[in-house]
Length: 149
Image 1 (cartoon, rainbow, N blue to C red):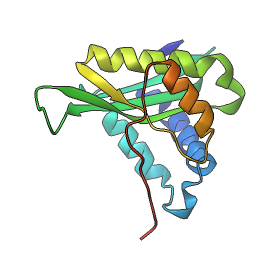
Image 2 (cartoon, helix red, strand yellow):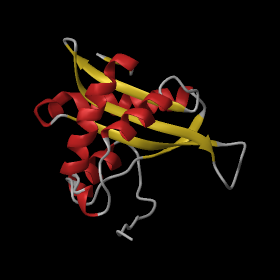
Image 3 (spheres, rainbow, N blue to C red):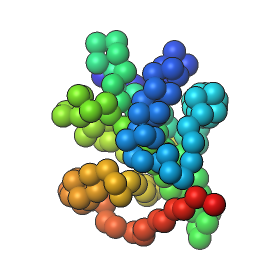
């Protein structure tokens, strides 16, 4: 079942966030902070300009997805959504990720977004995600680069 994230999900969201952080290789440019992540996730829940969903399988959260919605800088009357995260535990990836993404797209559209930007971490199945995104109607828009300062 895909549902809105609730405060009772916070610890599980932090666990999955930590797993994604390490899996994506962010260790070389940043550090993970459980308390900071918990606070950020808690502040995001229930806001009109944010969507946070979980995939719940028999009472256990196996996936999470979130996005923030804001006006575009070039046309303030138009809203866009930006993925904040989309992650599914590896054993649950077959069959959970697609419905979670579809629900996130619907939720941001329902909150007024007319466009949606998804990200793909270069070190994590970039080619697979490229094919998936293109099949769902996305097109490449830009690349991002990061370094530790």
